[in-house]
Image (cartoon, rainbow, N blue to C red; front, top):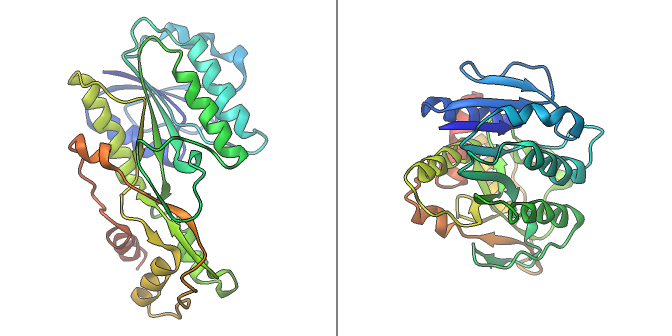
Length: 276
């Protein structure tokens, strides 16, 4: 397959490596002049600057992946909505079989511990969620298949928010807050898994949640991390009120995808081992 990937940050680099490992021909569009993974072709363009994008019309991708993240000086609106609109207006549609957009479970506004799944209506509760949903809605106009991959909190060896939080007792959770996560390696593997689904002729949904499907409270994760490192742990807060949401991943499982890191303990055990 000929894959056109927009964006090559931390997650994008992992997706690119997984894409190349599967033998696909990969062209990457990125803003910075940093190199792309060996084996990929690079186009150095800023998709927010529409005047730069006619060059995309010369490509004939089978798959388009939009996995851009905001940078300093650009708003969410510019990155997710304007940039995606510009790309879709300039890419050659004749060859496209499927468009994938890296979205977020932040489009779900539930915040009292409710359960969320792929069938839950997306009702954002903040500006970021509304912008992300507006970007997803651009895909509905496409003549080809399209899927918004709604990814929960990504963690990995370079994404150590909770480990830093553990070191700052002033910021320990004062109430029960549900969290949902997925290891960055599993996100990359899921993306190329869906590429294979396209090759196999599967009919993919318009959106799919990408998470490990094992919600945990923030204090539970911090307590486990503290035990592993033999450092002070935050206390268990009162059971009520609760915030956050709990997210299932049933469609991802139904496709046959197998997570490498099935829960936070598996993922963070690997990370802690690498930090020794």
